[in-house]
Length: 262
Length: 245
Image (cartoon, rainbow over the protein chains, first blue to last red):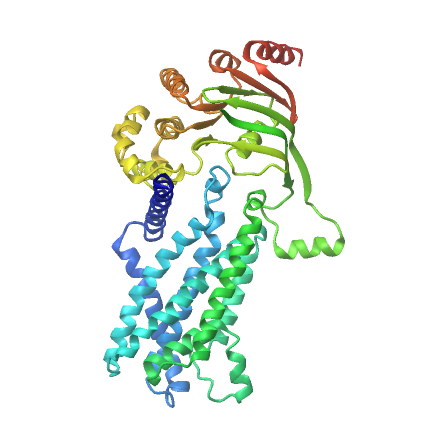
């Protein structure tokens, strides 16, 4: 019995060691060991926000209270999704040299990539709350609920990463197709416009887009001042779990087949 | 106890032009009804078993399926047919130098590789110094990996895999690394590991080396198992076969 516990402990600590080393590697590679490297990845969403704010305030900002925050909430979520899934897509192919030579759990490569994205997102989130404070929205304990959509989004991103990385191994042009896809997704996620002008039926269609659901959750929480209902919570969770389950199944099925295509 | 046991193991690959194939190409191929995917059997009906402390030498010409067999035993691939049992922790060295990150330092790479081979941080902290000493890379610890010469890279890879005391060690064409002095040192290290009870698979084109070190030999040709058994006898037959070619 003691032996079994010891063995389990050992196996977890070995995996943790590998995970930590992979995270370190991905971090060093991403930021090239410079402090500025990290700063750049913060500046990029802020620049985007600045441009969007300048351009769109004229069109949509007049009737939307706290438009900059509205925009930021959308941009923040979308940027995180994009960063995380692009990283995830490359997770297998970038490690092809290792995967074809050493037998390792392949999901480790994807998860380690996501850690860097999550940290990056966390930093942007801090800036977001600074903006919220500056814009005159008083802090409320309700804001803590933002953890819920974020956790769902992280799981959702990991699931998408699973699916994309598997597709990318098998179809090398997925990269380009995904560029187009993310661009369309951006326009469909109501990042810089509001859905007020649409009929109720069309509005409902927006909820088919998981990203829109996460963005809306955060907006309701921060700008509109209420915690969304049970249905929204269920939808957030559903998208995350469903995508993760699909991704995990693909990995399980193709675990030994990936290497043929690398 | 039998450490590695293979019964009628066959392994096939799917081969084709995958490196540039996109979704578009697949659709076009599907419409035209022509597929570039082909099945290629790299290893056919191989059966053998080795015990603890054995060193199995695998010989055969290029394309005989030696590396594929190593991949199957190290768990990267699965046999398409037949059964296999491998008991113990494995450190495999398939093609040296791959899987290292050129942008990381020697030290970082050593820890990363150690982690991949399944060791704990504690263990690596304790063993790190002897790995570097054995690889004779003391002055290069903080250099980028890409700055090393190819001989140095292989020395490091070899040292990591050997100093970590695996139960099963798979060496694919790696003992011919480094200069003469290092080669001798690595052979000695290998013998030490084997005496310590490790089971080893050694793929080598140096028949001399196989004769000196192996306790059993497996001869493959075009995926087929030609012979398995005593070292000297099979080595003699293999040498004869090579002469005739």
